[in-house]
Image (spheres, one colour):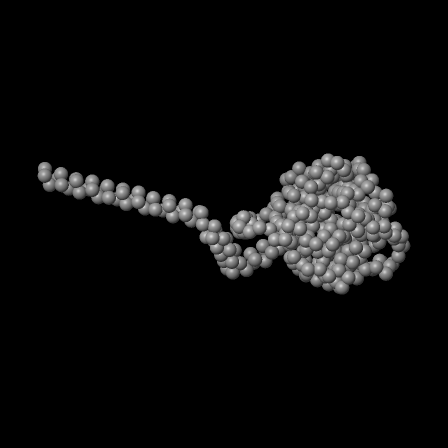
Length: 382
């Protein structure tokens, strides 16, 4: 009986020792985790090293991430169709940016930009409305990329990337739009072009700039000028939607458009872009109209193929087809084949809403400005 009692006591002591050891380990582990969470330095290093590691081990990720920040138009709406890898990288880089922003004040340059984010009225110059018609046109792209399309309606070539059947019946869609009011804005306000002697500028990103005098916003101002001259009521909003963060551009531009429409009702809503870089940074789709070399244009029309509410896409598509048909009559080659996609691109906000891509990275700003007077003339004739 005595031996049995000693043995049971030893077992009890061992159990108590193990329990105490576990509690001590849990205590110190919890304390270490809390310390780890509070270490902003560790967070920065981990974020940085994770991105470096991913880029080093899988080089394609670095390319994909760059394209997700510069060529999202090839992938669809950035807010609605982000890839898994893109989300991970965006989250990690957002942590770094948030921590650094908390620690550092905005620089003087950023303060100036922040002050300009609120849209301010433009002073429009008087321009000559003598825009040539009936002149010889010729495509003069020097660094071409093969164009493709799978539908042609009344001479308008369309690359249909959706599962919807698009045919001549789309022209039976009723267009009930106010053609006097036009809204121009830019989801990617900082998109820019190849610097030239006439328009040199300091890039703040790869073919991007926050200087509105050299970005696609300047192209929007030119279109606005001509349309005002032709008697349209035009609102041109130059709010930054892709700066300081690129991700979320379409969400921010949607808010801008909705706010503008509260006081300036418009059915014709043009989101003016510069085309994505694609496979060639020197890609310069161009057409010679008379003596002018102008950047080619391209419609991008969204649908509800991605599952988002979009009752206007057929109306938008008919408007784009009729406008491009008129352009083909007046200035053959001004427009490239249009693209119809599953993404919505905020085009549910108007019954004649569209994206118009003006040139590409290989074009110069002066070529894109030339395009606007011919586009405005086509809109006036339509």
